[in-house]
Length: 136
Image (cartoon, rainbow, N blue to C red):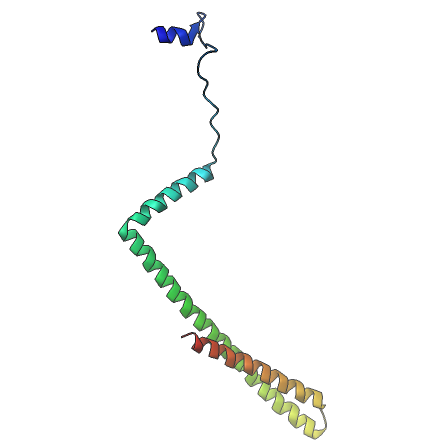
């Protein structure tokens, strides 16, 4: 108890720590998010050592990558169909404007605009399908 008497002094009401006692530095406050990050990092390292979890992560990654490629190809084909349909409407507009042009009711600008619209949207449609098929 000699150690106890050297470190602490009592005045009868409570214990007062002597000035020679080792002081504990203030513990820095760590946020909850930092704690969660540390736990997640440790759990991730432990999971990386487990063969079953590693295999499951690779399987999920492969599956998501495959579904992503298929969804991208489907997107390109759907957009190609939409653009080709719009080009088809452009063909009908061109035929209507061409007939009006020959009857003298429309200017050449309307015919040129219809041709340009049809060619541009036709190119968008064809190139979209081409990109979809090229990716296979």
